[in-house]
Amino acid sequence: MESFDLNHPMPLRVLLLGASGTMGIATARALVDRGYHVTSVVRPPSVNSTLKIAALQKQLSGTEIRWCDASDATALRRDGFATDSFDAVISCMASRTGVPKDAWLVDYEAHSKALQIAKECGVTHFVLLSAICVQKPLLEFQHAKLAFEQELIASGLTYSIVRPTAFFKSLSGQIQRVKAGKPFLIFGDGKHTACKPISDHDLGDFLASCLEDASRHNRILPIGGPGPAITPYEQGAYLFQLLGKTPRFKSVPLGMLSFLAKVLGGVGKIIPSLATKAELARIGHYYASESMLLWDFEKQRYDADATPSYGSQTLFDAYKQWVKEESIPERGDHAVF
Image (cartoon, rainbow, N blue to C red; front, side, top):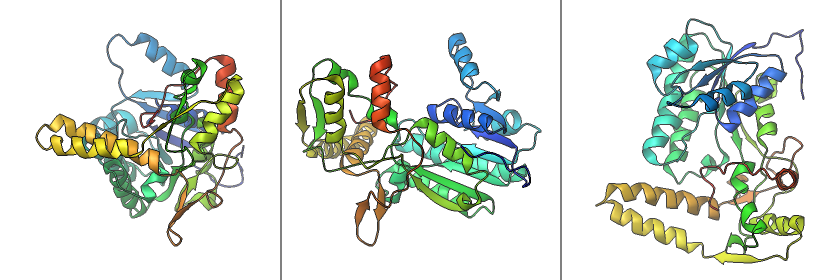
């Protein structure tokens, strides 16, 4: 872990948006460990959520928690920024579903309002957690993220746009299936796509490091975890080996999701609720058919070797830990299986 160089001025006060999610919590820990004064903005809890509040207070210990809906500009100005001054903003906010209404509300509008308030309050550095998939934008949430990225770049603030590959939790959904003796589900032969997933801890540390590493200023930063890129087939093969089970795979036709999206999209023109399901099917098809690696525009292919790596924990390390502790994380919202 990098540490402060006290001979150089550094941002000390950080406002953290999206602090209650897994990435927000990991980033808060990294910032606190580095000595920053962190204010965590957390959506106000719903009724009967005493246990959730207590858990968040423990997870965000060392930070000041401010209960505030960051998508409400008035509330964010009044209760989030309040009358304090901040040196930097780090945003881990993201739409949960990726459907158009949610995506444009959170991935673009909420960020755009937060950026404007940050500028008015004298913030000099804005670190954004984006996603590597925006490099090939085919979905509404990707266009929404890109729209804000461009706004941030043009804002005049120092920026760091971090585009991670894949999260561990999005690749954890089949552990219980395999433990129960069921086959590991793959699209096609399971070797069509690959990724270099990064742990919450390592990504949180990378986000925090953007504040003090000048080489990460005013840059778009694709980032993956350590080790070689792995395919879905390799993920399944490792799980079977880890659990001492005979490998069993079940292939799902990739065209199933695209067909479903087309059918739902057509019916969705008449029944609006199905249009949302069509977009979710398109999201599923995207993640099943595209690698989460750096895209080489000149060669028109994904390049695992060119995808930067950071951190120390691999997905297989996490598999070992989850199986040993029998603690499977909640799946990511965009997990296919």
